[in-house]
Length: 166
View 1 (cartoon, rainbow, N blue to C red):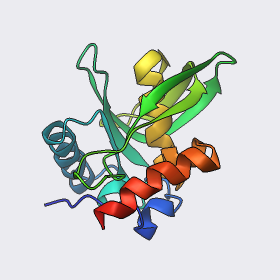
View 2 (view 1 turned 30 degrees about the vertical axis):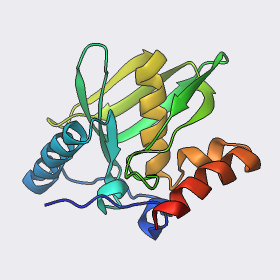
View 3 (view 1 turned 120 degrees about the horizontal axis):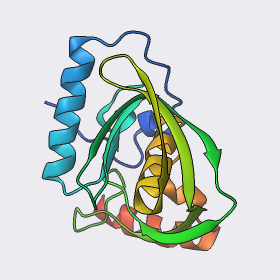
View 4 (view 1 turned 180 degrees about the vertical axis):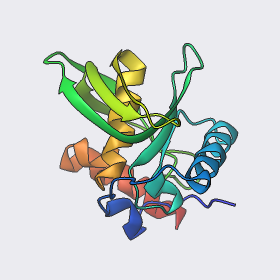
């Protein structure tokens, strides 16, 4: 059973290593991550959030309900156009045990490439919510949290809510 790592756990601040082999264990872990993401009403979950320092993630397009299982994802292009939206994270919880949200500005669209379950390299252009989700989740693979994109004042406001939880 996977366990969610929460803000303050050093695994969330570690850079992940590429996945060399697609094993049955990796695929099973990704299945569990999809179930965990669904159970917590999330739209994305990256390996470090469940304690693995490997470059893989799962995410769902909330509009189409398409689930992406990405191994070694890499964003190869970012749009110049920016978009500000509210973001939260299953690893950044407040005193009510729910994600804390704040507005984050990110590129509006991206091109992302990854290896799928079958070992094939695939890619997609994503915009809107899917672009935001894949940027948020790939940040996790580099030890970056959404709060790192906030101004110092906004970040402190979020962290005050997180600290109340403890």
